[in-house]
Length: 156
Image (tube, rainbow, N blue to C red; front, side, top):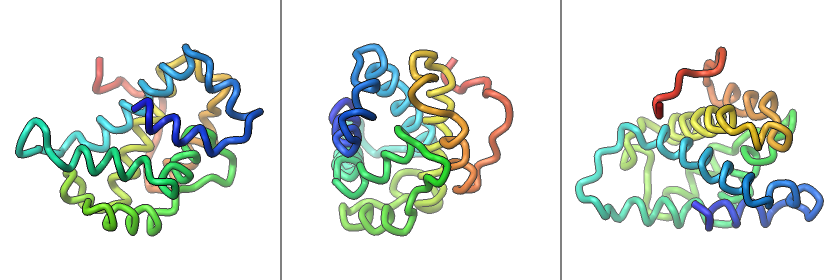
């Protein structure tokens, strides 16, 4: 996850990136991104422990276009939204599809990733000052998520 996060943070200007590069916040962001992936992949049943889809998923997330889109999660603004069509095209170009990963479509995969990331941010007080929840919540809602009060996490 650290490689993916590094790729995403490279898309920020120096001023915006600095508060997110503190060690404690980087660990918290990695944790939140892990929650997002766990939520997105919760229905995936790999055929083998070292499934090639996992490598393809990591490679997809490290693509420049994808890391720029994931910036909408790490550094959300009021008008942030993920470009589902563009992310789907990149996913297909990498040899992946949402159905390979246990989701009915790309939008569902991205919604689960975003909601899981949002819930992960909720659980990380070190990030509350630098990753605003309201715009992140709007990104999730634009994908069709129904967010209410803080969750009782799947991961407890």
